[in-house]
Length: 505
Image (tube, rainbow, N blue to C red; front, side, top):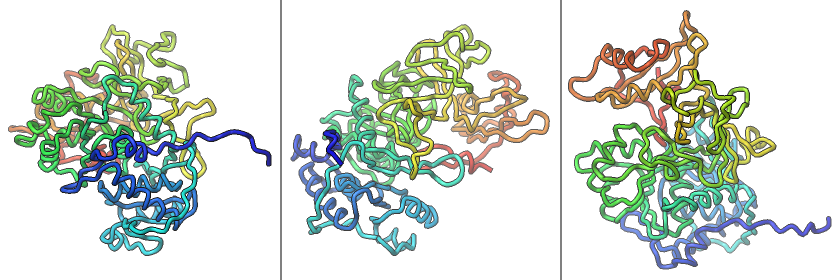
């Protein structure tokens, strides 16, 4: 076959680049251990040869590890070796891990001894100890090569693995680089407490540290007091966090004081309640930057860092380099990259304040180099022929052109044919001064088809009654949106902080 002359763009190697730029700078801090970029680069090289010696290019390598140096080495070594990483949640059950390993067809599993015994795994398992590995050849790796399979939580059934290339991971950093001031820079010290098996912890957290040759402070599990101590003791300047972290800190006596030295606080993976955001800003003088994204997008799509940072409820605007459209269920475009299509916008559907120039709610549809290539193994469910991908999330644009996230399409409640968005009801309930959090789901109703039902965690003394909360809602919601209310002690959550509504009784 004749040579086409096409030279594939090589995949970025952020650890090698960081080691060349700042070899003696601290890359990772884990307890009393400090690893420089030069040290980390050497460890990654050793581990890459180990992985290459036991697998073939393109093979999948699973790892069941926490936010540790071992994870970081294994992750970057797998990429450098031209293999496909499959990071798995260490809290998975044996059935969940076995399913993912079989689904991905993993040739190698890197796992600690305790988890190996707990999960009953035997074949293809190795410890994350790569010293004195044989010098197996490392193949050239292209930006378009598959880098990672990330299992998404999904709303029902088994998780699906999103296929992300080296180029897609790097593209999201290049998009974030175009924000001023930058979210992360080379002089920053970043708290890495969001789990690395999640796209947000993996690429926005760990990936940003490597991309900028910054310093990452590892937290294998999140304890609010311990994490606050890490922030204070190591001079952390950036927190890549989730709502539960900020909620815990604002409720911890003295916890918020440790965060006053932060340059940037970022929140993603799930919506942040208004009360926590306000308490944080009052105590630190800093506004938490909100980001929105999905695993399939590597993951960030929008952020308040490119819009009005102090706007309640906003997910900001698209990152530079991300195209974003709001579309009706019929595919008509309501809004695209800041431009409204007035002929498709119906005033009676608006959730924006009456009389404002806000748009109807529409599905978020995106295009950009950070998008995934579809779901493993056949690429199904990926972007269309023009590169657009429908997220399944609903949002509207307000009068300023900032996006307000409404809900998932699958969580939409139909009451006598009228759309009811759970997030709208949740915002009303969460605004009550003695409500800690709420979750609204649809319940079957013989009269109306469905009705909204709210699970509410209350706080304060005295705690509000169901009747008081119903009166609160009645003053702020149309009658067909009024929920039945059930008081509960807590809401089930995923490791990234999202409420698992399917687990509600």
